[in-house]
Amino acid sequence: MKFNRKAFEYFYALLIIFLLWYMISQIVNINLIPSPILVIENLSKTFKSKLMIHVEYSLFRILMGILLSLIIGVPTGIIMGYFSKIDKLLSPIVYLIYPIPKIAFLPIVMLLFGLGEMSKIFMITVIVVFQVIVSLRDAVKGIPENIYYSIYSLGGSWFQILKEIIIPASLINILTSIRVALGTAISVLFFTETFGTEYGIGYFIMDSWTRVNYIDMYSGIIVLSLMGIILFSTIDFLGIIFCRW
Image 1 (cartoon, rainbow, N blue to C red):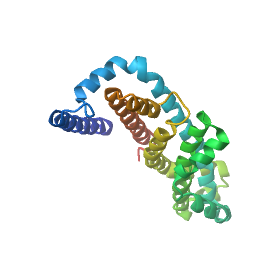
Image 2: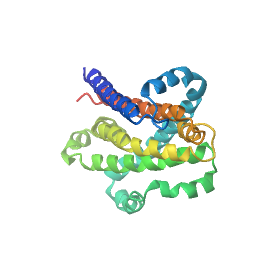
Image 3: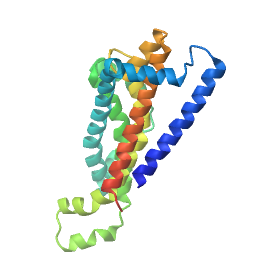
Image 4: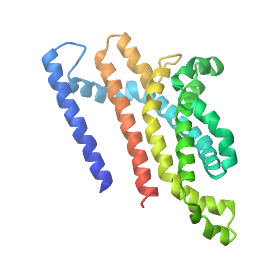
């Protein structure tokens, strides 16, 4: 029921946007703002032949970035939250790097990793991983001390504490941190895909712009928006499944 309501809300928002877009295109009547009807027709005709490969590359980069962020961020955040000595050691480093706009690292990343896939995936990872670490560390620190006592008294192992208390209590924070970071990650993905690549939604949009093919450009923007909606909805769906409480 909750998922159906969310789908209806997205549909309603898209309908309002397309109506406003159509009205503006009719009032302005210039090539720069084509009718959404023309864009949708173009998208339906060219998605498989033109856009599909760009979507595949962009999704691969985002998913790999998120996966690497979880592999690095989840254990780091849990360890920092549970062991205060490690937190005191790592927190200054995290808080020093965390506020820096990650796009500032792009020239360094490109010099280190080149213009290929690794630099793009690394940038997404850098953005998401700090969100995961900080959110998860705070979530673990927020678990009341007395909740651990029952497992301590029964001689529970670290793995049991992790499985029965820490992960269930922190899972919603992991999903929330990814959701918050996704918007920035997609923006950075768009920016990085304008350098040294021939594939990706960012490249497709900018290439269409330079060719003055505004219908293709808007088609790419719509696909990028739909990718964001799908990723956000997937995280919401995972939250419904794994965090029923």
